[in-house]
Length: 46
Image (cartoon, rainbow, N blue to C red; front, side, top):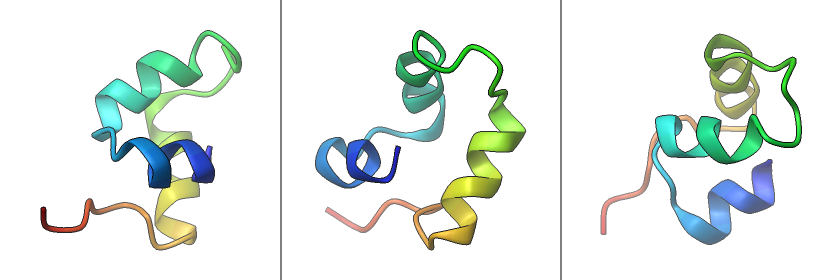
């Protein structure tokens, strides 16, 4: 999930859409907590 976020720069909702096909048990809150723990909860400025 970390590599996907770093390489694509997808916003949270788009990331949830992609990840839900592979990890259906993960909800939006769980994904946000994981990203926040890794410091990836905010997208870098363009």
